[in-house]
Image (cartoon, rainbow over all chains, first blue to last red; front, side, top):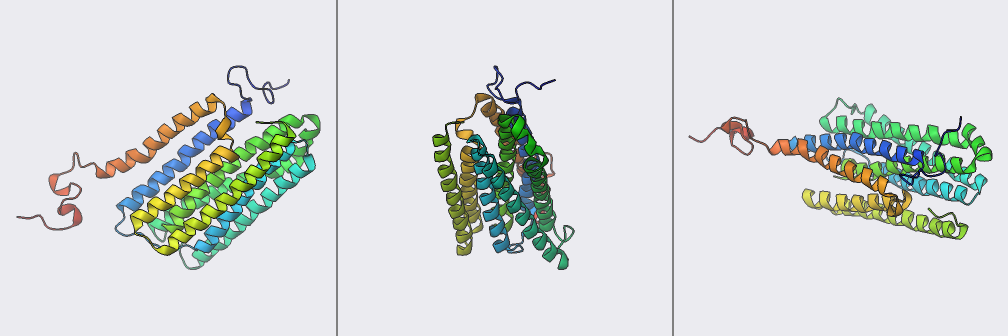
Amino acid sequence: MEIPYTVEPRPDSGLANGKLGVWLFLASEVMLFGALFSTYILLRVGAIEWPHGELSVALGGINTVILIASSVTMVIAWAQLKMHNFSRGRLFLIITMVLATIFLVNKYFEYAEHFSKGEGPWHSTFFAIYFTLTGLHGLHIIGGIVVMAYLAGPGAGLWKRNPDQFTNRVEYTGLYWHFVDLVWIFLFPVLYLL
Amino acid sequence: MHSDPAAIQKSIRTYLMVGATLLVFTAITIGVNLIHLAVPLAITVALIIATMKGSMVAAIFMHLNHEKKWIYGALILTVVFFAVLILLPNLSVADSIGKPIGFASGSRAAHGEPAKR
């Protein structure tokens, strides 16, 4: 049985089902991160003093550059598939995945340095909220890598059967990925600079 | 979204330019941090720049600059609930209703000082 509206838009919404589904998922993600940002504000406003300069701005800055670059390569991957250029589309998808992995490696070194100094989540309110926010964000990065690896690997076979559906899948993954980038755009100044 | 190859090629140039602009904004954010502004001003500047960057990602990379009304509708609802989520717990900090007068926010007792006789 064929699933309807995977490529062609629904007559009522003008959207393919997957796209509306991803946007509703992202709306729930906004609420998830929103709750944690609200917690951060509440903790910070209630704190007598708030630590400053605990995190490496250089590492955070490098990770920001990496995520922005990965957002660009992700949207180019989709654009290449839209132009029916599968090999380039897949290449840019793989580059995005590599950049995401580098982000995680950087994060590993950052976490390792803090743990070696005994600065785990138990150390202070600041480190508790830092590890919660960046840990959840890191899990989202891992989720993105898994989906991209599937699309570039075993899931790529769909391109031969239904290239439009494959392109849509890459677009939805891209929407998720840009959201992950967007969250980091706010996490970086809030945790590293302020 | 366009399916004409020439239009998509043009879009790729836009994506690259937006990417470069985002990097410039990141450099500005870090640069402003080096100036050591007063905390309220530093927070305002950093959040304004982050909002500009976030808007660019949403509008250009996520194609929100030309999306269908169903998605705008879902996002407007999200923004409303997000605002409530951020504001409501934080408004409770300023709320002194129901607290003993001596413990109301801003009172001497709340700051650990003895009440004036």
